[in-house]
Figure 1: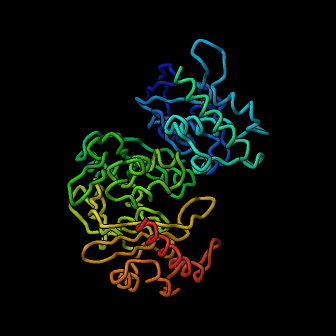
Figure 2: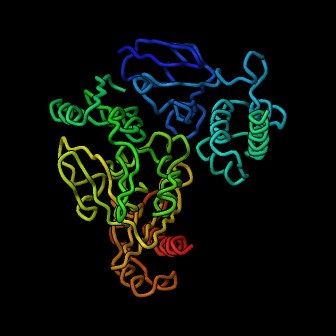
Figure 3: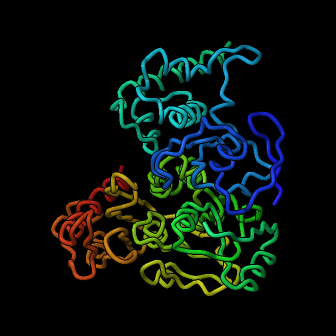
Length: 161
Length: 265
């Protein structure tokens, strides 16, 4: 079947088998390999993308659900438009050492950006609750939580400018 | 996944017709249970009928003494609803405890109730509040809807369109989560109405159930101490790698007390 959607700001039309997962479509057909497959059972969160602004697990989303929708992947995260700057959340992860091996990081970032966008007054407890569906086997989460709080503050500051 | 045809009807009668005319077809709402099931090849329907274009199945409406939640309303919307946070905060809290943010973006109340997973959260809220399940054919009381392990009163071809909740005086939910899946190891929903109290338990057995002795005790004195000494029988409770039946029985009392506390706070 043919589906049309907006992918990282660009109109995209693809022909897919209905039994295609969004993460397969992204990685294998569209060559966007920043979205990772960790557990493939909707537990780990490495595959989180934004569907119409909301975080979803692309390993548990069928491609037909994209038709008419707006999809943002880790490749579409960016800093100030027109610049080559990182997104403030990515800057914060770099600054605060919010990753070690980096495998979970794309999903962490997508979940973190959605959390910060939804709640401008994030607390540490909100961040820990919000990251329940994103598993990291390296960091022990401490610096991820610090990074998300710093990234959220930077996003708020950027909004105020 | 085995291949399947995909239908996205935009009218309820069309959806019902597709579902009843295509043998081995299945409905997909948010897909949070169905898609993993397809991936494991535990189900291989020939066609999926996607309900996401049925706009009438979305949204939360205030009818005064009741609140109606459309079947395709995602958990995140229920959790964030100011109306529910004001009138049935225990139900909004329950929705905020389901899965994780990504699951709450997609998963729907109708999908959860139709699936009737023995460890799902919503069945406890629906039975605990004595809600009414509205379908494409009729209305079904919660007490007659949940029939056991993944089994409901739904007939083939019948589609849940909404759940109607009576507004209680107070209600609360508490659960102990299985840490990996975040399903309820045991979850208890407690609701106080002018004519009595309802207590519904999920996660502990093959399906959601009520606890009459706790309901009677709480109807007399709505406080955690009223039920502290009530132990439920381990007969029919689940024993698995996560917890033995006697531990689940213990947790029912603990979670019921916490749910009462939540309702009082």
